[in-house]
Length: 165
Image (cartoon, rainbow, N blue to C red; front, side, top):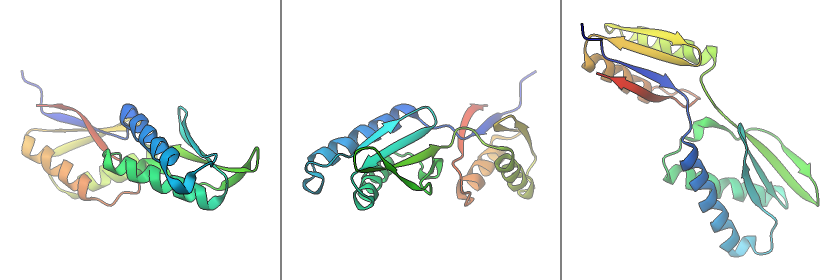
């Protein structure tokens, strides 16, 4: 017997694209006149970005350059927490640690399942750890769910994987 069509809703970042965006941002920072001789850098760790610069003004410019490069590469800015505080760092510099969202938490999965149930389509949404699996008889219903999630104004990033028809 054939299996019903399904897909997963996750919050997963494309690491190579992020690495490319950071590389492009660093290249621009090193070549821009207003950053001449400045000690600005962007580092990627497992769960965060560490941005360093000489002062808050330059750090905000680093953030602007980085977010522009991420947007051009199709990386959702909702996957990052740019609201963290700016702290003093070594050598007369300031630093900001930007948390990277990895996976959906309980509250976010509940928001997604509630939205799906409100659509009143013949689909089943199941929370599976840090993702939500959606199963339905018709692919059209699944595509409607995808459209609803894309159009929903969540404050977090939601991607689709494992589409099985």
